[in-house]
Image: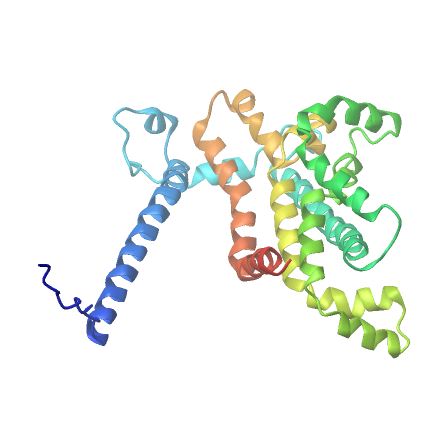
Length: 297
């Protein structure tokens, strides 16, 4: 004969036990994030320390973390680099800034207009055009290098910054990001502006753009970073040394200075610092824009 057993009562943890559990989980999370941060920052720290070393110290084995003498002149010598005919390090830095900032501004303007059209306007073939635009993201950039170079040659854009600014004015990925963001903007705001007699362009300029500021800053940061770090397109289109951007110039340091790794690292630091500063000031908007577009779109 089976004996009935009383059901087991589940023990509910007390508030103190629950608090300790949350604290342990938070501590574990911060430890893991700290380890990830250390692993991520280690190459940058080693490169920064290498800027103060001699070449012999950089390639020495076993490697040494700190230099015997802190050679600040490595930074001074790199800044004073001169390939002749106006090809100087400050000029390359200025070239890179012009291309990166100009391309980012053009992309914010062009992509926001295209995104507003996809998010709000009705026109024949809109879905087909949007799908074709997304499909273009699947095409590797190397496939279009030769056709793009032929086009740039035909319109006399080679060895001008237009060869970088014009193609950099549009990005299918950024149009998609802005489209998803703008779809979440309440239509009632635009309808109220229509009632007040505002034109479509004024609504786009005075209503939509201010609300889309996080997404616009995200696009600006992404394009600025992408163009600042660009190498293949500037190498292909910019032929004279004084027109080079910083990445192309850094690739020539080995020829100019006969494998001066310390000077190359200094140039790389100069190349990295502007992007780090930009992200440090606008990272909150970047995270907000990406998260909002992904969750609300």
